[in-house]
Length: 299
Ligand SMILES: Nc1nc2c(ncn2[C@@H]2O[C@H](COP(=O)(O)OP(=O)(O)OP(=O)(O)O)[C@@H](O)[C@H]2O)c(=O)[nH]1
Ligand SMILES: [Mg+2]
Image (cartoon, rainbow, N blue to C red; front, side):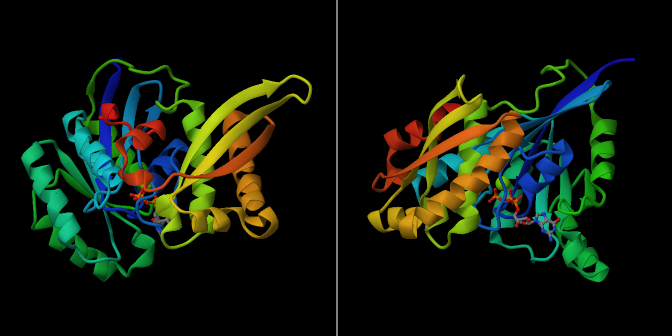
């Protein structure tokens, strides 16, 4: 039996459920998720391996009209996958009409000449009639290789989509060892789990203004725990106050929630220490962006 493999990018507007889909396929949280737009900021691989195939999924930042240097980085890294993959999953939500954002992406997809599968997500939120109308509308915009309605949250039809991808795979190498699930180091996942809790617990500009950097991570032999020091960067003093909260209550909550997720990923007990720092307008400063892991070299 020949081994098959391929690279598959997941593209779409912010908040359509790309990361939720990736995590469902992988059976664990690799990419953070939230109800805020622009949650994902870096490309992130989910490596799905069975004994006969390897599908390397690439989750991407939601494509939007960038307003900051960080936004430029995010959108460029999403589009860069068009040069790297064998198939694109273009994800749209079943419960929102096609908009300018989708049309912009469709133009780029047409130009890229990569096979595109339309994935209509969040079918749990609509009546079947609305789903059919949505499919019809998108079908008229471009030639899709397949159209697959799913619910990434509940898992409906996700295995059907994997089957379709499997059927279309070509003979190829196993690019990554069977036990490797992503391309990012543990430090990245740790910083993302902390950022996810900030997204869940704060509102308005704060989710967009936050970056998290892991300063150090090492095992403490005495306590047998992994000791992690991380800094939460914000853009303004007022935001620092909100993240710390009254008597440090908010920071404590963020730390407690993040620690649970980090312990799951590392499979180890964790002692997490968090600090908050202000870096004015970091989202528009190239040097800060690079320091916080949003590096142009990445795409
Ligand atoms: N009802 C429902 N909600 C979903 C489904 N898939 C995702 N969601 C929700 O949609 C929101 C966005 O999900 P994400 O996976 O973070 O979306 P994303 O496309 O990765 O977003 P960005 O990273 O910002 O581009 C979250 O609140 C999810 O719980 C679904 O199938 N049904
Ligand atoms: Mg995402």
